[in-house]
Image (tube, one colour):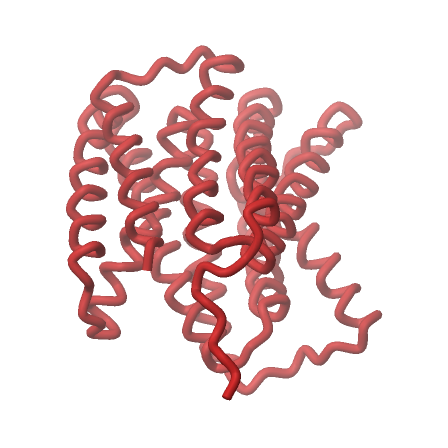
Length: 289
C-alpha cells in the first residue's frame, strides 16, 4: 500500500521560490501606490489592470492547451470570485490611503480570518496551536488599529482590515472548490474574469484615466509582477515545504515596510510595528497544521 507523502515533504531550495513571490507582490504593492499618487488613478482602474492581464493570459493558455472552461459548480465559482473581487477592491483602496506596510499586513490577516470562518461555518474544531495563533493575531490587529485610525482615519482602516476578512472567506471557498476537484487555473481564471468585468464596469461609471506612454511601464509592471508572484508562489507550494513556504510568504510584509520607508518615507509607530510582528507570528502559527 503506497505511503501518503508527509505534509511538509518537499525541497528547501524549492521553498525559496516564495522569496521571489514575496518580492513580486511587494513590488506590485508599491507600483499600485505610486501609480495612484502619480497619475491620480482610482482603485477600480488599478484592479482592472491587475486582473485583466491574468484573465487574458490564462484564457489564451487554456484554449491553446485545449482545457475545458466548463464547470459543475458555477455558483460556487461566482461567490468565490465575487468575494475575491470585493476583497481586491478594498485591498487596493487600502494601498492608496494607508501606509504600504499597514495595507499589506491587513491583507495578510486572511489566514486569521480563514481560521475563524473554518470554526464558524465549517464547525471545525481548532487545535490548541490554532487558538494560540488566533489570540496572537487578534492582539496584533488591535495594536495596529489604534495608530492607524488616529493617523489615517476610520474608513481606510476599516476597509483595509475588511479586505483581509473577506479574503479569508474567499480562500475558504478556494479550498472547498479544490476539494471538489476544480483545477487551480480555472478557479483563478473565473476570479480574474469576474474581477475584470466588475472593475471595468465601475471604472466606466466612475471615469477612466487617459493612458499615456509614461503610465504604461507602471501598469504593465503591476500586471507582470502580480502574475509572476502568483506563478512563483504556486511553484513554491508545488515543490517546496508547505510550512516553510507559508512562513516565507510573510517576507512581503517586511519588504513592503522597507519600500514604504525608502519610497514614501513612511515611519510607523512602535505600537503598529509590534502589531505587524504579531500578525506575522500568528500567520506562521496558523499555517503550521
